[in-house]
Length: 74
Image (cartoon, rainbow, N blue to C red; front, top):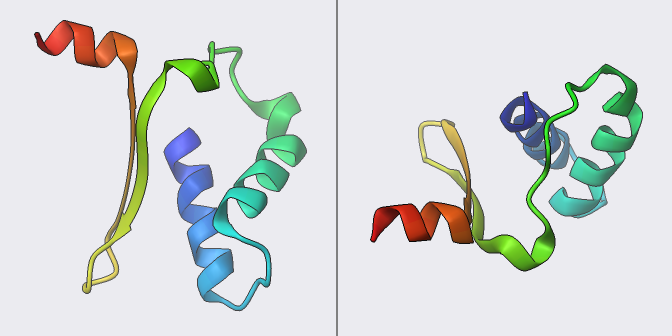
């Protein structure tokens, strides 16, 4: 569900929204908070890398890597 929200933020930016993608994402999360499942979000200190990539064909990928993900890969 969070990836869908990120995609919506990117679409809104591409449609001309003057806010940054993180600002749009935060706004959407705030608006949708009552509807979102109570899943723990990684704390900012646990996030190692976060990215949103739009390919030329319009496909959008979002990825968040946490310390736990990186430890599991070792």
